[in-house]
Length: 396
Image (cartoon, rainbow, N blue to C red; front, side, top):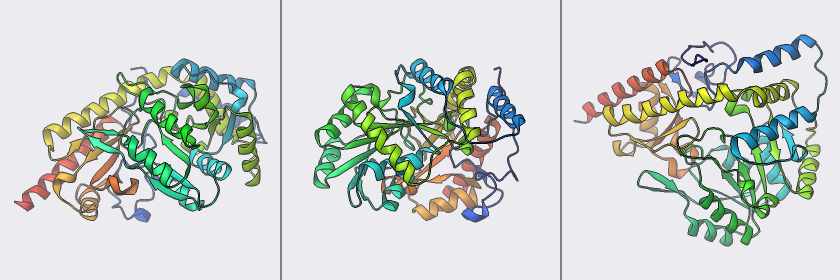
């Protein structure tokens, strides 16, 4: 490979949330961190050069996107996903979660029902509750090792709770599904039928593996495009989450104006200068880097699948389609969530994301971030095997 993803980059003592705050999270200092969704890889050199060039100017005044910024976005989504967008229909925000909260305040009122499909990215639930909306959950069904939407339950919950918005996660974090066009169409039609606005979180859109293809929700039909906002960002794809930039695509002029009005209410006007600089460079020059990264990640995912199957068959690998976050099923061990948490943190000395934080359906699961050098992943799997063998031997 042209790019060295095997290189160990020491991130300790860099104010890294992933590495430097174990004590604050009740995790042993010597635990390997494979939890929060940022990667341990250096960003493309072109992104570094763009940031350096901006820094050397020595002036960091207010900025706003120009035509070349929008061209980078539209070319990226057209080339990578076959989705034709218009530059001026993007609205900048500091992060996707920030955008989701703004969209909830824009298109729903307090106490309105907002539906999500758990287990799912836990800031969805906290954002709904923090904005005084009613949380409505339609649980995903795990069938033959693969998660599916329970469409009957989904529609019934919408009707019963007079739901006004649906936060869609595609690709789905943490269960690794890349929803098909047929599945998205069924969800979208139900939402149209009942007047439910769709907030599509597509931050992991660039990580679909194998034959799986990400389908942007707004690309399916004109009606869907008019009834949604698509939250995109280069931050997961290019490992620049700390630069705080996202781009929300809103097809409807009226809806877009309302979103901008809401952002004005909280005083958000201009994007971060370095975030905008990095985003433009990443989408302009980062395709080759991403292609190699996806190949490397696919090998890491395959390693976890094989290792777990051979060495710790009590743990079930949930078949993976998208994201660099792997979902593992520990329920066969018969442990409570707290017992499993103790096993992972204190015996295996691993810092993963506990499944229960993603909703009731995540109980007994763990999410592992495989976007790390392979040697680190191998070491983590070895720790897991040793801890599980000790646990199983103790039970005999």
